[in-house]
Image 1: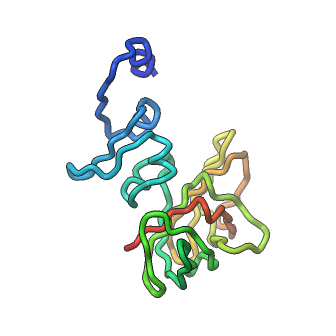
Image 2: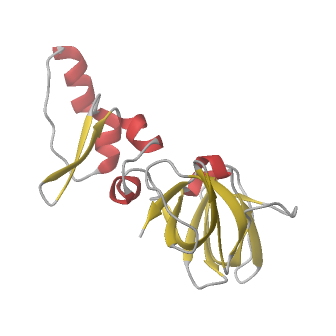
Length: 182
């Protein structure tokens, strides 16, 4: 916060190098994400958060970090792909960055904040069991082991009670996901 105040008070251009994505998201007007000395993406913090150019950027920005699920591409239609796996009911998601073909494997990225418990049967639900629940007051962070064994984090925006070991279905807005080719 002090660096942010100093930046505002000086009104000068500052270059700040950090490995801490929270600092970068908080302080920056523009972020340059590097990996192994190569620029991965440049842009405003929330532009990179909402529109990552690749899986590295998607996983680097955001706390808790993005969940990634290996999925099978069932079919494609224009800019959308129908995907599924053992823990995910078939759902149509946008292909924003990478194009994939039917029969290929891909990785589906879902931010923990975009997951919500669901009791209704809807396309794209994830199924698993609660293995950890952190009640933090204004939010509850839940770790789920999906049916296929994949761990998943859900950051729920309310105080919720989950018993360890109980089954849970999680829904999400398919439009808020990111699909990456393997």
